[in-house]
Image (cartoon, rainbow, N blue to C red):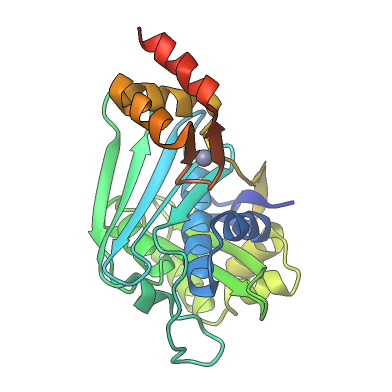
Length: 290
Ligand code: ZN
């Protein structure tokens, strides 16, 4: 079972959120039939969204859009405070030569462009902040976003390990946030310590739990585990929503679909779920439009 933990040092100098997302990244891979580079990119963005989403409340939602000019196209992922995450990559079938043995060239596949984070906090207008993509490696870009757009001194690490068959072996990440009033000295010690840590995907592959990851990140500092949330792949789509979408197309469009194919097949972008509508279903929708 995938989950996320929140932790803090007793002196309230920093917080660490850590998560293992091997299960949800594997579900996303299967649903979208992603190839390894796309799997790693999508898994990293999903893990980042889970970490940022943990900072929200109730039904609030965060959406991360990574719009690069690389072969993957855009990645769109949304998550909420309940650890529910969904997402897709525009072009799941991408392959590029490996420059470094064993390292998937995610940055090159994402390219340059814009990373934006939209927070829907149930207010009239959602809040969106955008930054330029600096490496396309995702964790570096999200850290850049947190520091420049939200002024939160942060370090984030995200990692996905894909095996020879293309399945997800390990996926996870952490977000270290320095709290207001934290000593410069502590930040310096943590920064130095982070530089010497193994990749988070290696930790997860070696069996590390989110608690283990947080303790690794904290190094010599003590932390208290505050909260634990289950993480799951969950979409907001459903038959009713898809019906509403079809109805919104209007009578003529529905009539055309009945004539051309006798029904409709609608695939949800976000989760890959396919909704089939028979001719009777479509005629019932036409009735509703009268
Ligand atoms: Zn869906």
